Image 1 (cartoon, rainbow, N blue to C red):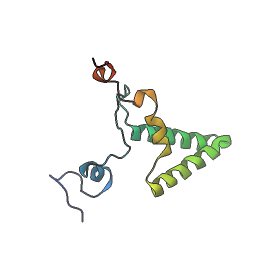
Image 2: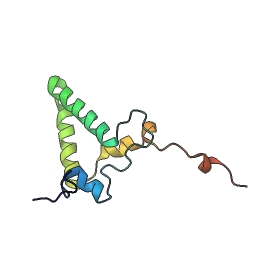
Image 3: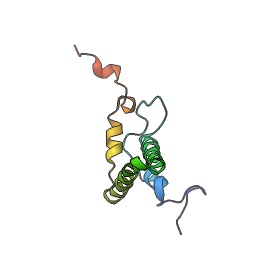
Length: 105
């Protein structure tokens, strides 16, 4: 059995374990996102859409296979290429600080 804190999520299991142990799941989470979607949710949304399209449209079935292979690879290596690419998009970056852009005199 897993122990829990205050009757909430058990420690050592899933996403809660990562948060409790001060590790992030996908690196930068909100980073100024106007949509409010974390990188993790963006990845799941894209992969889910591609799998649905790949299964609904026979010509796009390789897309579903590619997403499945990417998920297996991400699970084995604990890295996610799609999350890395999404972090570089403008809406997932941290807004520039005013202090960082001012020249020092």
